[in-house]
Every structure is written in structure tokens, then in C-alpha cells.
Image 1 (tube, one colour):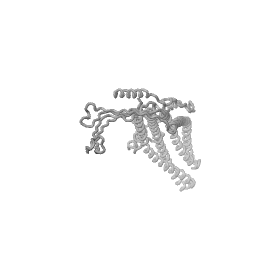
Image 2 (cartoon, rainbow, N blue to C red):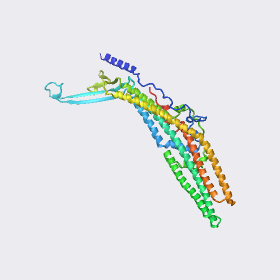
Image 3 (tube, one colour):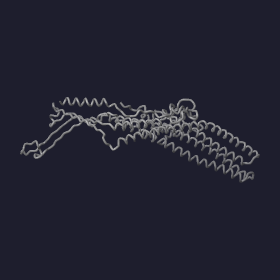
Image 4 (cartoon, helix red, strand yellow):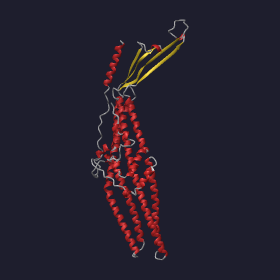
Length: 493
């Protein structure tokens, strides 16, 4: 009789396990593209930015060393990588709920019962009873059969969250590469501007000394001296300004790097004279807006969050259906430790439990509504992320087409101001004109050269922004998030 009962129970369990393939996760359909099919400005031709590693895009060896050092030490990137590992562990915890929990159990019981409380003693014996009980076996504790996919839905939501965190970490890495490159270029530009200011101040000092000498000999005027003093003090003010900016730029670079820069790296950076000596950045094509769906990690992260919300709907739907939990144990038991492993000492227990939600005060309905609303929120977030990416690329493309023309015009302006200064100096030296035109030309040339450096920096940073906006700027080799790439994500059985 016992064997037939056990066989019937096992058959029931097997049948329930075979039926546990039902899931209530809604079919997923990617939302439509909430932007135009093409960018307002063409994006050129060449390899895609997402396929071009930062070591290829940034050819400056000093910048390459600086980026590599930052990827190894930046704290924000390190936190992102740890968040990925945490999310992966949470996914494994959720997935483990699909399997029964087995544990070995050994117990020993010694209990003394007084004579007047013992029902097993003969009347009037006047002696208590000592009970002995020993057992050893295995136990499965409250294994819930996932008949309607609630646990699998929860595990899928955790998996999608893990994948989203991995993509977010990749976004942090891409942003860090762009930030380091942009700050490095800013540092180079400010150093170049400082050099221009120092050279101009040296020239203006000679002019000031000349006008002072001429005023002493009666060939110059006090007005000439005052005007020369103005130009010289203006250049001095620029020197102080750019000295401060260069120091602050280096502080920002060290902050992004996450550690003091090695002296050898600083020396290598110092050998780069200025931004104008930087190798040109390769032009990357924009492609189509639909390409961003697969190239931008922030968009992929948003879609994984949407998939997680979609899986949570399945878990909320499954809560309306019964849940079945199984508790069982088996082993040997005896009232004597010496006979624990003798024949006939086997023991077992099987305890199935079914729970059917009858009245929950509307909690299940509210949880389902909440899951559906959260999915709509994630759809809006996904679409907003796409729109933001489209905006980033469009702005950078517009900058690319206009910066080139503006930079050429500014270079022509510098050449014109240089010619103006030379002619004004020649006219003054031959006595045709006064010194005022020379001072005006000096000031115009200084401003034009400083503006050229600033414009060249803006163009360089615009190209970096476009590269980042198109999903470029990552290389899996030797980076903290290399082990957390989505391609390495564990798959459910």
C-alpha cells in the first residue's frame, strides 16, 4: 500500500512538472522608430563609429595612454562594472528558484519524561521515561512548481535587468573615453592659447619699452605709451587666465583618470605642443537613425528595461493562478544510534501544498495594472532615449558641416590680421602713420589667434561628440566592463 501511494505521488509530481511550460509574458514587439528615417544632414562614408575602436579613432599616442589609464582607474566605471556583477548575481538568485532546494539533515533527540506525565509507564511504577530518536537523511524544502511561469517570468525580468546594467556600463565607458579626449583637447588648446598670450605679451613689452623711450626723447607721446600699456596689460591678463585654465584642465583630467598620472605619461603629454599639432580625427558616417538601435548601448539598455517590464507582466498574471509547493524528506530513523543504519529503518515524508488566491483585496489586480503601467513608462523611456540619440547625432552633423567653413574663415581672418599688423608696423616705422594703428592691429591679431584656437577646439570636440553619439568609443580589450558584455550573458535553460 505504501509503495503504491508513493508511486501515485511521484506520478502526480511528474505530470505537474511536464505541465509547467505555461507562461503569461506578452509577446514582445519593438516600438516603432519615433524619429525621421534620415538625418537632416548627410553623414559621409566610411566605417561605422561603433565598429571603430577608440585606439583607431584617436591617433595621438599620449591620448591613447591617457584613455587606457583612465579606463583602468576611473571610479564611476568601476562602480558600473560592479553593478553589472551585482545584477548578474541577482539574476542567478532568481533563476535558482526554479529548482528544488535539497539539504542534508541529521537530528538527535534525547528527552526525559517524568513518571506522572508518561502514558507509557505501568501504573505505579514510579519511574520516568527517557526517549531517544536519531535520524539522518535529505530534505527538499518548499519547492514551488512553476506551472504558470511566475518564477520564470521573474527570472527573465532579472536577466533583462542584468543585460540593461551591462549596456549601461558600456555607455559609461563610451562617455568616459569621450570625456577624457575632450578634456585632453581642452588642455592642449589652453596651453596653446597660453603660449600665444605669452608671445604677444613679450612683443607688447618691447613695443611698450620702445614707446617709453620715444616719449623720453620727444618723438613719441604719452598717448602712445598709454595705448602700449593697455595692450601689454591685456596680454598679461590673458596669461593669468590661461595659466589658471591649464591647471584646472589638468585637475579635471586627473579626476577622470581616477588616480595621479604617472610622471612618464605627464611627460609624454607635455611633449605635444598644442591642439594645432593633433592628428586629424577620421570622419565617421552617421548611417541611418535605425542603426542607433543596435549601435547605442543606452538604447539597448532602455530596450532591456522594456523587456524586463514585459516579463513582470507575466509574473503579475501568473499570481492569479494556483501555486503548488512540495516538501519532502527521506532517510533513516531509529531510537538507537547503533541501529540507525539497520534494515527497516528507512523513513520518508511527502507533503504537497496547493494555494489558490480567493480574496486578496484587489492586490493582484493592482499589481497587474502596475506592471502594465510600468511597461508603458519603459516604452516612453525607450522612445525618449532614441529621440535624444537622434538629436545628438543631428546636432553633431550640423556642426560638422558648418565648423569647417567657419574654421577656414577664421584662419583667413588670422592671416588678414597678421598682414594688417605687418603693414601697420611698416607704415609706423617709415613715419607714414602713428602708433595707434599698430596697437589696434596687435590687439586684433591676438583676439583672432585665440578665437582660432577656441574654434579648432570646438570643431574637435564636435567630432568626438558625433563619434560618441554614434556608439563609438569602446574596446573590450583590457577594460573593467569587458567581462560584463551582453554577449556573455547567461541564458535560461
